[in-house]
Image (cartoon, one colour):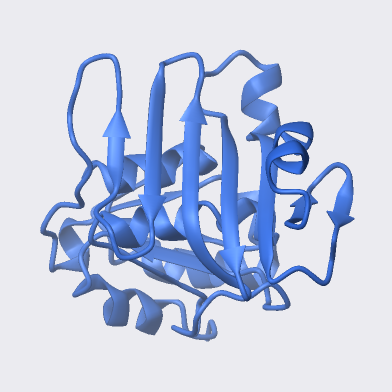
Length: 211
């Protein structure tokens, strides 16, 4: 991916989990994660994915989730509806779910939340319909298809979320940190994604500091 981008757009910046940052002064920066969901990948579960994001002045303007085993691909472009391609068809779009009590909640792993984060997540989980663990980037694709309603995670780096943001937002959802603020590269690494915008204030209230 780096070689292809460098050959096509040599002035663009490229940031990846494995090989650092090239052209750091460029306002246009690709953010790459070749395998998001390493544990899923090495244990043979098809819920990992390749993430490709594009930032302009630090703002995600394009995102791709590609799952090569299932043949599914999500494409998000700022200001446009999210597009989805899969072997059985379908289209992207979050589902109506205005009540947290009816919401399907997801997170990758409890151990990634930390002690305080896990307490706060449990506050959210207590109000949700059901919790499903695991998924990495694939869970965000499922949210964009209307199968999951809320995702709350901690410890994310920019290569974990940059590609997801345009996909979630373009499907009708919203993605912020746990304070409801925009995600940023130097932020705390918290991420909250909701499919129905009515869930955002409810989820944020539950993710407030644990008692």
